[in-house]
Length: 191
Picture 1 (cartoon, rainbow, N blue to C red):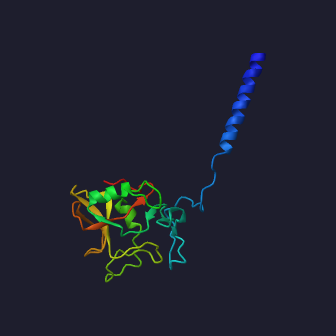
Picture 2: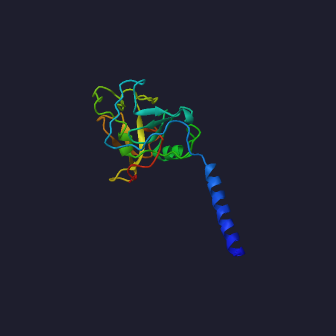
Picture 3: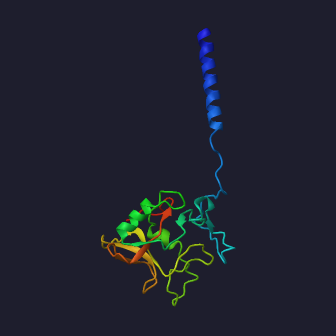
């Protein structure tokens, strides 16, 4: 009987200890919580002040932007690194943007989520971003992590081109495109 009481007391003490240790865990995060994206939603932007789609993340020193359509977090300064594909991959891997690591090049599918088909104008010589976007960008092209399925020495890029469509380009070209880094689960694995 004495042995059973000791065993029961130990179990009760262990349970109280577990509950107490769980009570000390952080249960809230800084900033607002955003539910996972719904792939059928459209959050239209009209101006920077009225853009529910993009949220500049102050807890990342305003160096990153949450896209509430996709749940991806993008580097805000999209014109920071220009290099070949290999070094662009490395730039993102080594980046500490907003005090946070874990960045990568986006897939072609992810990068194209920033393309605004409705605002596309043939005479406009840049990747047409949604109205009200908070990114710092100009007439640029960006590398993606997606290798061409036709030629392994080429990778997909998007941005200004003669056809205004995503194109593949030699991975070793040093001045072709910029690295824009992203965080989040890859929508599609890079080929």
